[in-house]
Image (cartoon, rainbow, N blue to C red; front, top):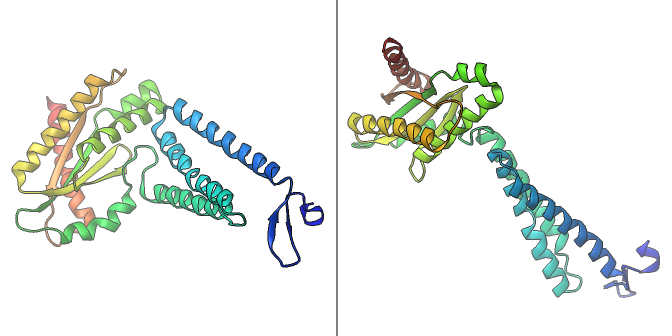
Length: 258
């Protein structure tokens, strides 16, 4: 409509853009949508408790920053296209972050998935040096099937989320890779000086699970079995993980006999 009556904008004979008398109405409508959607997302972010939903909403909240800057710029400089270019850039950033999460991060537990492990394995191997040996720790939840059978799969998912929280805490600010390997199996990969340090780290993993149970009163108890193995030159990723897996099941058998 404004092309014919110039109510929102018009272009003069010199091909110069000008704002029309109802330009404010367009700003009010667009701004209303902008503010209303922001308040809705922010309210949902505050109320929701699921960690993975919160992460998605947090990324969505970042979308609003650049368009807001665009509003300020376009109002300071008449004719400067600020809002929509900024919105397009911001949408692209949100989309790329979502795609990164989908490809790289396990949606339930928040740790990396197996694709990341396969990509980064060669670089971790190349970082091995004297006094900087590479270890993989594999752990799974004891009696996880009974949690699913007794309380349902939603509670089983909750247990897996708790395990992810523990693992992320164990590796926070450390040069370690955390991976959900499959089901209730998780990997932690990092450099250590020797087997003594690896054994101490295994004990630290067990202590963190005990601490989680103390701080989180649930109808179930999170317990884990852990196996670890040092990387041997020439071994494939699967062979290396299999070495740790054998140690894991030796520990499970010892627990069963006990």
